[in-house]
Length: 139
Image (cartoon, rainbow, N blue to C red; front, side, top):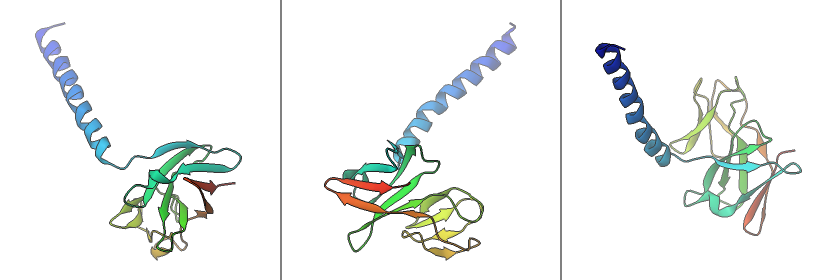
């Protein structure tokens, strides 16, 4: 290996290593999806997973999409699939609303359609509070 190749490889390695801590620290700032599992058609979510914001995003083995779970003003809970009904794009929380990153369809925190191109709201699942757990029925 000549000097030029050595320096080029060393620079690539340093650049890759420099990005790892930045990616890890940025990931730590973002709300993370809690890993869960579907058992008998139900996902059990600890109430404390909702935190101060009153909402969380979870993923569950056995379920293809992430769910947005939130506490409503009346004290009940909702679970919404974070998949846009328009073309199946990913939906993320942004400034108090849920927005499809592909085409900009916007939904309220209750899943209701606010702005298209989607013609329908987000798919919802029934949620039952049981002690310190929320039971989301997905099947």
